Every structure is written in C-alpha cells, then in structure tokens.
Image (cartoon, rainbow, N blue to C red; front, side):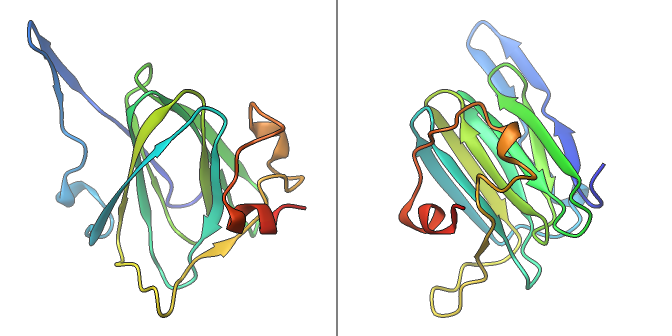
Length: 155
C-alpha cells in the first residue's frame, strides 16, 4: 500500500427513511480538515492527476454515483485504485505528495475534504498527465473529458 494512504469504510445505518453515514471524524485523520470542496462531474470526466508539495492531503468521498480513485506514488511508481461511491461506500485519505485524481464512472457528486485552504495567489497544485504510462491503464476510458489544465498536462 502507498505510504500514508488510508481506506476508510463508511458505515451506513439504514431504516425506512433511507440511510445515514458519518463521512469523517477529525480524531481519525492524520491532519485536521481546513476546507471542504464539492464537485459534480459527468460520466467520463477525469479530474487530475494532481499533487501538492506543501503538505495538503485530501480525503475523497463520492456522495452520489461511482468514481474510480487513482493514486500514484511519484517516487516508487506504485499505484492504487479503487471504485468508490454508491456500490462501495469508502472514503480514501491521500497524502498530497502522491499524484491523485478520479474518473467519474457515472454522473457523480464528489467531495474533497482537504487539510489546507486553497490560496489562489500561490496555488499548491501540480499535475501529472492522466495518460502517464504508469497510470493510463487504470482508467476505464481512453477519451476522457478534461479541464484545460489537465488537457495541458496530457502527454
């Protein structure tokens, strides 16, 4: 397993109204959460891979739909991938030094709980191409929908 990466199974408590799940408990995380982000993505979107040099870690949670999380240890080349969301309620804690991202396997609602606030004047966002040879085989699509920034990072 990639150093510092953690899988956190999310327990669902169901009754006739639906279900309840605890997404994160501060005492169970290596660092405190400082910002929470939310994104909606269409099926086929890949966001990332990104990494942070100044210590931001991410807790990935798929709130609706299914996503494929991909993590690359940039030093060793080791990879991690898991499909999370409706069919597999798991959160993934990723130390930000590792390149990380996700693919929307369905239309999805996704949350990133991060350990540093985003600084637009001095962003700590660096990219690894989605089609880097170390990870390209991990995605389910070979023609993803990408942001301009992620397109520029592509090989």
